[in-house]
Length: 202
Image (cartoon, rainbow, N blue to C red; front, top):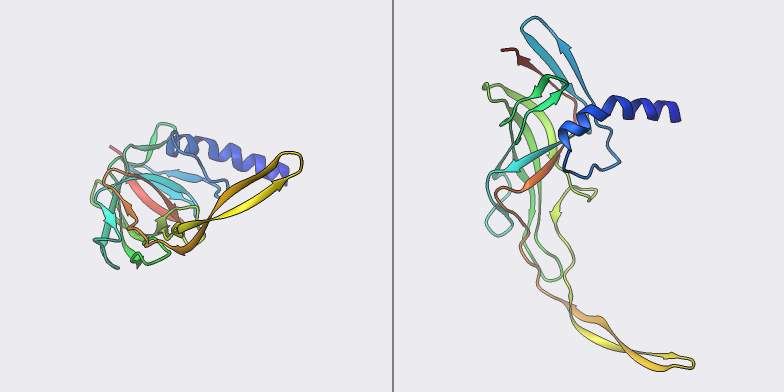
């Protein structure tokens, strides 16, 4: 098992540097890519679980958006394997909001984004299955519980030192706030299914 894990790390290190030179990489994903070189094109395969860094092109907010609204993100740089470009700069991930909840008492607004298309700069449209990555199991953005509206005092007695009062959150929860992503935000996209496409050589 240790030997197998070492091989995964060795095979993944090049693409990790290309994709995540400034990002923290979740340990739950094994990043990998394969490349098949032909006469006039390269066939690139990114495996399920691969993460991409992309830049959001518009504001997404539970205050202004609805389910099915279009979302676009663009890769900020070429993704290379050695000297070969595996995904060109300005490739575009296109998707939509598939879940959205407005703020309510006790909970902030939330949304989830899925992607179904990768558009390369040469005009290719490639079907994909991917989503915005978050630390949550359901990959939603927002949805946190809001703070309590007040406090209640708790008296603690410490032998030899006397007593002190601690203020603990209490009462009903506050009204939730809108959750949002601003234009220019760096977003991580994770593949839910293996992705293969051809990149034509110059």
